[in-house]
Image (cartoon, rainbow, N blue to C red; front, side, top):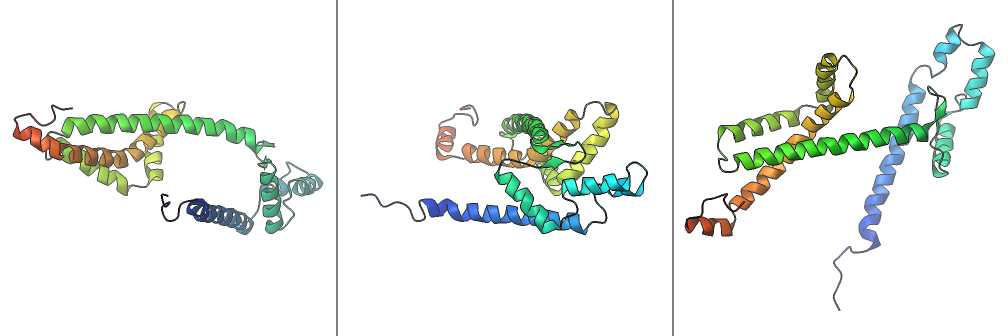
Length: 220
Protein backbone atom coordinates (compact mmCIF):
# COMPACT_ATOMS: atom_id res chain seq x y z
CA UNK A 1 0.00 0.00 0.00
CA UNK A 2 0.90 3.62 -0.17
CA UNK A 3 3.18 4.76 2.64
CA UNK A 4 1.89 7.96 4.29
CA UNK A 5 4.30 10.89 4.34
CA UNK A 6 6.56 11.20 7.33
CA UNK A 7 4.94 13.08 10.19
CA UNK A 8 1.43 12.43 8.89
CA UNK A 9 -1.24 12.09 11.54
CA UNK A 10 -1.80 13.41 15.02
CA UNK A 11 1.85 14.24 15.70
CA UNK A 12 1.95 16.62 12.73
CA UNK A 13 -0.40 19.07 14.44
CA UNK A 14 -0.10 18.11 18.11
CA UNK A 15 3.31 19.74 18.61
CA UNK A 16 2.33 23.11 17.03
CA UNK A 17 -0.92 23.09 19.01
CA UNK A 18 0.92 22.39 22.26
CA UNK A 19 3.38 25.19 21.48
CA UNK A 20 0.51 27.56 20.74
CA UNK A 21 -1.25 26.71 24.00
CA UNK A 22 1.98 27.09 25.99
CA UNK A 23 2.57 30.51 24.42
CA UNK A 24 -1.00 31.57 25.20
CA UNK A 25 -0.75 30.37 28.80
CA UNK A 26 2.54 32.19 29.22
CA UNK A 27 0.99 35.39 27.86
CA UNK A 28 -1.89 35.05 30.34
CA UNK A 29 0.44 34.60 33.29
CA UNK A 30 2.66 37.49 32.22
CA UNK A 31 -0.43 39.71 31.88
CA UNK A 32 -1.54 38.93 35.42
CA UNK A 33 2.00 39.52 36.68
CA UNK A 34 2.20 42.92 34.97
CA UNK A 35 -1.18 43.95 36.34
CA UNK A 36 -0.02 42.94 39.80
CA UNK A 37 3.27 44.84 39.43
CA UNK A 38 1.53 48.03 38.30
CA UNK A 39 0.82 50.49 41.12
CA UNK A 40 -2.83 50.56 42.15
CA UNK A 41 -5.80 48.79 40.61
CA UNK A 42 -9.26 49.55 39.25
CA UNK A 43 -10.55 50.79 42.62
CA UNK A 44 -7.49 52.79 43.70
CA UNK A 45 -8.88 56.13 42.51
CA UNK A 46 -12.21 55.49 44.20
CA UNK A 47 -10.44 54.55 47.43
CA UNK A 48 -8.53 57.85 47.60
CA UNK A 49 -11.51 59.98 46.58
CA UNK A 50 -14.83 60.61 48.20
CA UNK A 51 -16.73 58.79 45.44
CA UNK A 52 -17.09 55.61 47.50
CA UNK A 53 -16.89 54.89 51.19
CA UNK A 54 -13.90 52.79 52.36
CA UNK A 55 -16.23 49.97 53.41
CA UNK A 56 -17.82 49.94 49.96
CA UNK A 57 -14.40 49.82 48.29
CA UNK A 58 -13.41 46.88 50.50
CA UNK A 59 -16.60 45.02 49.58
CA UNK A 60 -16.00 45.65 45.87
CA UNK A 61 -12.39 44.48 46.11
CA UNK A 62 -13.56 41.26 47.70
CA UNK A 63 -16.36 40.87 45.15
CA UNK A 64 -14.01 41.28 42.18
CA UNK A 65 -11.23 39.24 43.78
CA UNK A 66 -8.77 42.14 43.83
CA UNK A 67 -7.78 41.26 47.39
CA UNK A 68 -6.43 37.89 46.25
CA UNK A 69 -2.87 37.17 45.02
CA UNK A 70 -2.40 37.14 41.27
CA UNK A 71 -1.82 33.35 40.94
CA UNK A 72 -5.19 32.72 42.53
CA UNK A 73 -6.87 35.29 40.30
CA UNK A 74 -5.23 33.78 37.22
CA UNK A 75 -6.32 30.27 38.21
CA UNK A 76 -9.88 31.44 38.84
CA UNK A 77 -10.00 33.17 35.45
CA UNK A 78 -8.65 30.12 33.62
CA UNK A 79 -11.09 27.84 35.42
CA UNK A 80 -13.99 30.14 34.55
CA UNK A 81 -12.81 30.32 30.92
CA UNK A 82 -12.92 26.55 30.62
CA UNK A 83 -16.48 26.70 31.94
CA UNK A 84 -17.56 29.35 29.43
CA UNK A 85 -17.17 32.34 31.76
CA UNK A 86 -14.96 34.94 30.07
CA UNK A 87 -14.86 37.18 33.11
CA UNK A 88 -16.46 40.44 34.17
CA UNK A 89 -15.71 43.94 32.91
CA UNK A 90 -15.05 46.19 35.89
CA UNK A 91 -15.42 49.41 33.91
CA UNK A 92 -18.74 48.39 32.30
CA UNK A 93 -19.94 46.14 35.15
CA UNK A 94 -21.03 43.64 32.50
CA UNK A 95 -19.98 40.13 31.46
CA UNK A 96 -17.06 40.17 29.03
CA UNK A 97 -18.49 37.76 26.44
CA UNK A 98 -21.31 40.02 25.10
CA UNK A 99 -18.84 42.91 24.82
CA UNK A 100 -16.28 40.70 23.12
CA UNK A 101 -18.84 39.25 20.73
CA UNK A 102 -19.97 42.71 19.64
CA UNK A 103 -16.42 43.88 19.02
CA UNK A 104 -15.41 40.62 17.34
CA UNK A 105 -18.11 41.13 14.72
CA UNK A 106 -16.88 44.66 14.08
CA UNK A 107 -13.29 43.41 13.84
CA UNK A 108 -14.30 40.72 11.34
CA UNK A 109 -16.13 43.24 9.16
CA UNK A 110 -13.16 45.58 9.32
CA UNK A 111 -10.65 42.85 8.43
CA UNK A 112 -12.70 41.57 5.48
CA UNK A 113 -13.23 45.08 4.12
CA UNK A 114 -9.52 45.91 4.45
CA UNK A 115 -8.51 42.68 2.72
CA UNK A 116 -10.95 43.36 -0.12
CA UNK A 117 -9.58 46.88 -0.63
CA UNK A 118 -5.94 45.79 -0.42
CA UNK A 119 -6.39 42.86 -2.82
CA UNK A 120 -8.36 44.97 -5.29
CA UNK A 121 -5.71 47.69 -5.30
CA UNK A 122 -2.85 45.17 -5.54
CA UNK A 123 -4.45 43.27 -8.45
CA UNK A 124 -5.33 46.45 -10.32
CA UNK A 125 -1.83 47.89 -9.95
CA UNK A 126 -0.25 44.52 -10.67
CA UNK A 127 -2.04 44.07 -13.99
CA UNK A 128 -1.49 47.73 -14.88
CA UNK A 129 2.28 47.46 -14.38
CA UNK A 130 2.85 43.89 -15.57
CA UNK A 131 3.78 44.88 -19.13
CA UNK A 132 6.34 47.38 -17.86
CA UNK A 133 8.01 45.79 -14.82
CA UNK A 134 10.74 48.44 -14.91
CA UNK A 135 8.36 51.36 -15.40
CA UNK A 136 8.07 54.28 -13.06
CA UNK A 137 4.70 53.19 -11.66
CA UNK A 138 5.99 49.73 -10.67
CA UNK A 139 9.09 51.24 -9.09
CA UNK A 140 7.06 53.84 -7.21
CA UNK A 141 4.60 51.30 -5.82
CA UNK A 142 7.39 48.90 -4.88
CA UNK A 143 9.33 51.64 -3.08
CA UNK A 144 6.19 52.76 -1.26
CA UNK A 145 5.41 49.17 -0.26
CA UNK A 146 8.90 48.59 1.12
CA UNK A 147 8.67 51.86 3.02
CA UNK A 148 5.29 50.90 4.51
CA UNK A 149 6.70 47.54 5.59
CA UNK A 150 9.24 49.42 7.70
CA UNK A 151 6.60 51.47 9.53
CA UNK A 152 4.91 49.80 12.54
CA UNK A 153 1.20 49.26 12.08
CA UNK A 154 0.41 51.18 15.25
CA UNK A 155 2.09 54.27 13.75
CA UNK A 156 -0.02 53.93 10.58
CA UNK A 157 -3.14 53.59 12.73
CA UNK A 158 -2.30 56.71 14.75
CA UNK A 159 -1.62 58.71 11.58
CA UNK A 160 -4.92 57.59 10.05
CA UNK A 161 -6.83 58.45 13.22
CA UNK A 162 -5.22 61.89 13.40
CA UNK A 163 -5.84 62.61 9.71
CA UNK A 164 -9.33 61.22 9.10
CA UNK A 165 -10.46 61.76 12.67
CA UNK A 166 -9.84 65.49 12.34
CA UNK A 167 -11.53 65.61 8.93
CA UNK A 168 -14.56 63.66 10.14
CA UNK A 169 -14.76 65.48 13.44
CA UNK A 170 -14.17 62.26 15.35
CA UNK A 171 -17.59 60.87 14.36
CA UNK A 172 -16.47 58.09 11.99
CA UNK A 173 -13.87 55.85 13.69
CA UNK A 174 -14.50 53.07 11.19
CA UNK A 175 -12.84 54.85 8.28
CA UNK A 176 -9.49 55.64 9.95
CA UNK A 177 -9.29 52.03 11.12
CA UNK A 178 -10.20 50.72 7.65
CA UNK A 179 -7.66 52.96 5.93
CA UNK A 180 -4.81 52.11 8.30
CA UNK A 181 -5.50 48.38 8.12
CA UNK A 182 -5.77 48.43 4.31
CA UNK A 183 -2.50 50.32 4.00
CA UNK A 184 -0.84 47.96 6.50
CA UNK A 185 -1.76 44.76 4.64
CA UNK A 186 -1.30 46.16 1.11
CA UNK A 187 2.52 45.85 0.84
CA UNK A 188 2.60 42.12 1.53
CA UNK A 189 -0.26 41.46 -0.86
CA UNK A 190 1.31 43.66 -3.53
CA UNK A 191 4.61 41.78 -3.37
CA UNK A 192 2.79 38.44 -3.65
CA UNK A 193 0.72 39.61 -6.61
CA UNK A 194 3.65 41.07 -8.54
CA UNK A 195 5.79 37.97 -7.90
CA UNK A 196 2.99 35.71 -9.18
CA UNK A 197 2.36 37.88 -12.25
CA UNK A 198 6.05 38.10 -13.09
CA UNK A 199 6.35 34.33 -12.80
CA UNK A 200 3.33 33.88 -15.08
CA UNK A 201 4.68 36.45 -17.54
CA UNK A 202 7.97 34.59 -17.82
CA UNK A 203 6.45 31.11 -18.02
CA UNK A 204 7.58 28.76 -20.77
CA UNK A 205 4.27 28.79 -22.66
CA UNK A 206 4.20 32.59 -22.62
CA UNK A 207 7.75 32.69 -23.97
CA UNK A 208 6.73 30.23 -26.72
CA UNK A 209 3.70 32.36 -27.59
CA UNK A 210 5.89 35.47 -27.73
CA UNK A 211 8.18 33.73 -30.22
CA UNK A 212 5.13 33.00 -32.37
CA UNK A 213 4.28 36.69 -32.38
CA UNK A 214 1.65 36.77 -29.64
CA UNK A 215 2.01 39.95 -27.62
CA UNK A 216 2.87 39.39 -24.00
CA UNK A 217 -0.11 39.91 -21.73
CA UNK A 218 -2.74 39.41 -24.46
CA UNK A 219 -3.40 35.95 -23.03
CA UNK A 220 -4.79 37.64 -19.96
